Length: 403
Image (cartoon, rainbow, N blue to C red; front, side, top):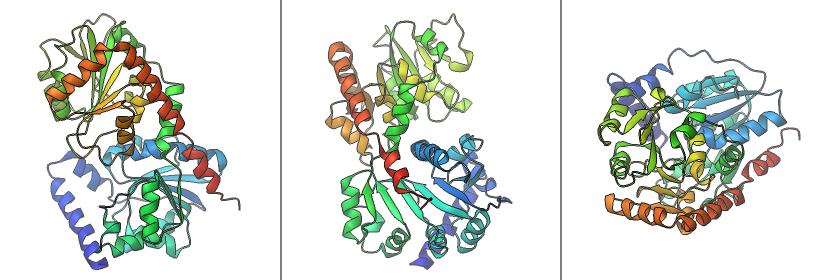
């Protein structure tokens, strides 16, 4: 099985290499791993994130770790360009790298050079050779905000190698009891249910949000519908709401903000209804604002009344909790099964899954027409987020490097 795994890793690299000739992200993925000189440390803490979402999820633990251990250097790695390119200059780390390809030699070189005292991986990302090298060197490895499902390879008859990866982990902090039970069924008992560290992150953000006066001016006393992290399939649906609610303002914050994507979005909106954030002035009267920069979405939700979260017509929905922390009802597409918080919000009647134009129109109509109920619902949603904080403290209290 290890041979198949190694071949799979190299085949994946080959596919990305081919794609890099015509795909910008693939090119960044390849070039970001070329001729890297890693900093050598006497000791450091290695935090790894698959992408930007996992970085935001693990950031509360990283920040709290720095408070507890200010003398330990922080090394971050990302698998995806969407994480590395946006956070490569983060002030929370001493060094930020792309994760090298998972080969025995890369794992030995990287870990020997940065010399971690501890490794912390957030939610996803299980790499055999990196995990094995950490285990061989006696370096503790923690998984935080982990979540497991029965269909994953760890729980399949052919998943022996991946179960071995799990055996290299010092301790698991998982989001729910189902994940803990699944791990226990395959003999893994070094696990606690801590919850999801994203709750700590979004709740802290909601208590002290960054003010954006330009957004307040754009809203100008109107109700505001925010469509965050959207893809074209999401935008096609939300765009059809604009004409139906002339008294509402709309904000689109697309997942990808290159000029082609922004222009494509503007092209499906009512004529002359939209303006880009970069072109916003104090005298605009447009109904729709298109966010064409990165980094303000989590603060936008403080101005919203209803949120739509993108990704549900693709691989899966993006972060619903950023909007929920401000008490916004959240609407999303049908692919949400891998996201516990989405299921929780649906059970709370604060989350709504839609799959076509009719279902989104009906959902929005109900929320708009019953303003009192929507406000009461907002308080329940905020309470749900608040009640699920605390994972960060639990993790940091367990990870005691001073023992």
